Image (cartoon, rainbow, N blue to C red; front, side):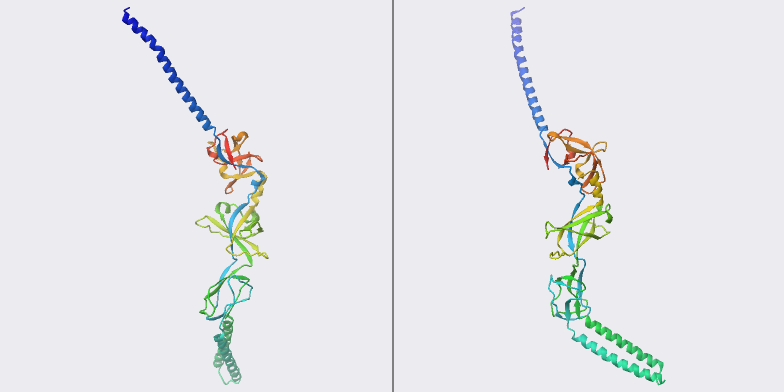
Length: 367
């Protein structure tokens, strides 16, 4: 073998170990980098996911719902005179309570008193004329037609007296019922025409509270289903008052898709509750008692379905790990749904973000 070829082979043999060591170092570096990435991904995957939770308890069984209410007057009326004239009495003040028959306002009665005296004088004259013609008729001195005309004039004079007396009574404006004066619409000594409103009054013989009920709940609850209704007023925090169902509207609000339900309660001595005040109304229905015997009410968003349309909850177990729990539910009741089976007393379940969880995943509970 030539000397040059022998030297080249030796050189090649010396380079092979160097190439093998370099490849080994590169492979080791890649392996370490991959392991570090796997560790980071594992740590990232195992980080607890925050989730809102709730505990199944008997407190959830109450289907009592709260509604925002507003105190309304039983009726609101603008009182007006039936006749015109000048106001000479307006003794009431705004916010004043009045009883049925109390004087609200009065007109100057001078013209109406004169009209009444004139009507009475004319009536007496027609009465004398009728008596004289009646005597002459009995003697066949006057005709039947003349007597009939006199009788008609007498009757019209009597009607005129009645009208004059009524118009004189109309110069006084009286309270039609126990009410509160909410607004004076005119000042005293104003000259007005008949039909001009003078004051606005509200019937406060009882307290009326109106609430708006969503159509989904309104269609399912009847008057007979209502078990208990209580109202709490913002002006009297911490005090609840029983109220009763009075009526409801049958026309839905086109904007809110709700129906108006009217509730009432008697006036309470020593407590002033006026129209316009706000109230929180709690309504409990008979269907809620039935649900309480069978299961728990949970937020509707807590119940999710799998690919087979089976419903389940994420129940929190040891170490805050969640497990899928299939449940049987009843009909949706607004924001809640009754869980009839599959959930036990005291168990904690996820109420928000349930759709993005996986079985065995660790969560950070947020109550």
